[in-house]
Image (cartoon, one colour):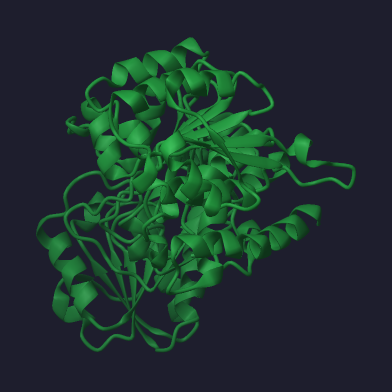
Length: 510
């Protein structure tokens, strides 16, 4: 997790996340450009040896497999032995299956190589997990499964090569069983599986090693998946200027529910105000006007009853962003209000009840988004709301990745889709996606999503495009929660935001 007082830490890692196929292409392009594959493997093995050498202990077992990951392990074993460590290689599979650079790396290792068995791990201080790489896409069975279970039960410190064995690098899934590493060393760029759960929880601390792959290969690969942080969207973030005024910072509208459900709308409105919108208005049913007005100071409150009144209210183009759903009620009234908002020129954030109201007729929602040209709409479902709205994606066994689900949902709906969770994914219809890893566990609290919806609307009201606005709001949301700490309730998020903004503006200015 990125701490709230370390915005600058986002520059420690490059933002591009590479699938296993994209990483293979990066290797291929580098080798085609004249860098020997063995040079890449040697550099990778040295990086792993460095990570293992930073741990306490002198007895090392390298658990190697028959692929390139195993080759990295053989290189690491050789370098650790040269540094005085007592090293053994425990090999899973048939050694004659080693090919290419991995076979060369094995011939350069002159120490002991044993057929893998759990007994070989007894008494070791450090285990180097070089069994499988990030490309694993099948269930782990047999001897490999036995060794992973023994590694986890060993009590030794574990350094994983590229990704803990058993984790799928492209989607973070556990393929039956997976190593729980203390440290993971990956190469050139992180993989989605390093950020997506449950993979992220298996990695421990993460190091990205430079092994000689030039950044220019990304020009050919054109990755579409990114780690969420200021490096992704900072250039488009609305930083207030000395000559600015409130009318230049947009006017966000939050549509309130009835008398008994106004709290969610008020949380969203306060989130919008703290996130920088110049003006924020709660569009309130008449019966809830008094309670909304009594509980709001800087937030304005206006009577707006039903879809026709909302359409008229949003006819003023200065009201350029609107949130619907928080505490708004499920049913026909909400559906009509959503369609009225989508017919306006305002940017639209649809959350909670606004999404559930279209559970039986999602095509009506998607058609309305398409009719407005698709732009300026963000959907913010949690897993349950996602399942009701995108049923076709949740019943397909081929769609088993949170990243893939969000991406396909964005394509199907024509909107930016923000699929919530500790590893929130934001996906755009053009295929771009961001993955967040800075949300602390105490962010899972009632009303936090309402605040997030308001923050997204505020950033779009200030001119930020929807994908960048949603990604930025998610990151800020996590940073605010981390800054406040345990015991957080939704109201605390808006109070923690100013400190996060100060650090962000300082970082963006540097």
